Length: 365
Ligand code: SF4
Ligand SMILES: [Zn+2]
Ligand SMILES: [Zn+2]
Image (cartoon, rainbow, N blue to C red):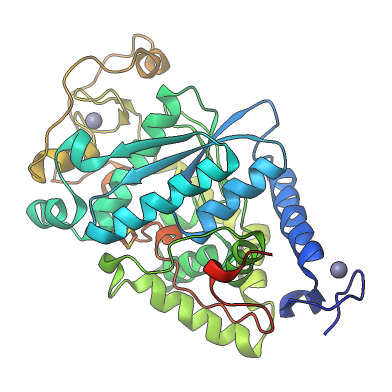
């Protein structure tokens, strides 16, 4: 097996490219694919500041590493979810990576800052753990980005994640989600721009990237992920890919090219006027935002004090309307059960990299 570029021994075959690559040319391929995604979807410019949502898993550490290598101003944000050993270990990987790269890692601890953890808080709030977790992550990443003056939030969603999310949304014809399933969501009323620079790279490639680069990441799956439908969708697509190389890519990018625009009107109509949450100042379509309601239901505590003035500035002198609440979770797009909890955190490891080594721990080149 020889590298397509230099004919030296290859370490990975990528069937959808019908090619093999040596370590150097594989790393270059990963960077090139990220550059291509950034340019094709106008994700970020070098003078913008980016906050990377870091879970300690392979995808989020790889996207942070590639953005830094490409010269982007990228800091990390790690959110401690209070999920026992899993959180302790994933936080350690995130810190180790930041220290090795000399990068800035911002940390927020859900138990310390808000008085609840995902396992107990979700039970008390009667929400599925992944739903409470996804809602908390979206809220806290957005808020931290705005308060820290970041232009963009980057996540480690890869091609496998996006194809699986698309599969789930099509399976249930969740048309309002289909209209929002884009590699870039523009900034609006108090939400930062969101970007997914890894959409052109698969899960197996991201694991290989970390192995080759010597990036240690948490391999164990989150214990809360058990029974998660997203993982089943991923496995189904991986089975299809095994007999039809490139199926995930053509499913996802075919959707973006030929179908996504058809659902956007519905997604836009679904985005009600937003006003500041009376508790935290974040944009919401109800009086109190979904996250603040979750904190209360989970038995946690809302921080005292004024909201960040930057958030108020987004709204100017916008007057808060009467609350439009006709049900516990009505109206607020952030408050629906998350159909696709952040897959970057589940990261089932499907790596088969023969002849390269499997464990990231023994992967130092
Ligand atoms: S599986 Fe992912 S979304 Fe679900 S609780 Fe764990 S980290 Fe959160
Ligand atoms: Zn080569
Ligand atoms: Zn709030």
